Image (cartoon, rainbow, N blue to C red):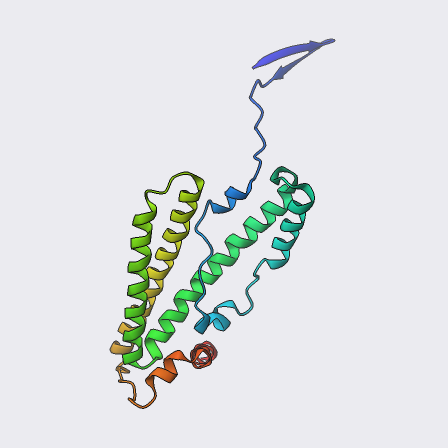
Length: 202
């Protein structure tokens, strides 16, 4: 605290350091988890009505093409980071909701196949993450960041799928799939989408 005299008046002045302005760069977009990977068979349900930030991203790329370096694109970086964070939160909720609905309604044999598939994906991602632990520098960090995010999302989808299967057991809807059509039902993305949209309307 200091003071200064101007004529007959005495003023007190706080001697606090000035706050430094934060400069965003591209790597700041990796502060949170990466954007979730959306399986094609449920993409139409998960992505419906979600702001995908593609227009903001185009503006960011255009700014970087014109200015070449990030400090001149602070507004575009900040807008995209905020939009992407909100988008990814919504997508993760939708993904888990979709897996839960599939677990509670798709034929039980096919639900078990989906559990096996997600368990295999999670194990593979975990192994790749271990292998990436020896990678150095920013490239190594990016690999681990991406793999860890995908592994976490896959495990949460798996948990939601299993909760849906447990719910069907408590409600007495545990019915086996008919042997004549299980593979076609599982591989048809439109079938999964119709099932999810039917649950949304209920």
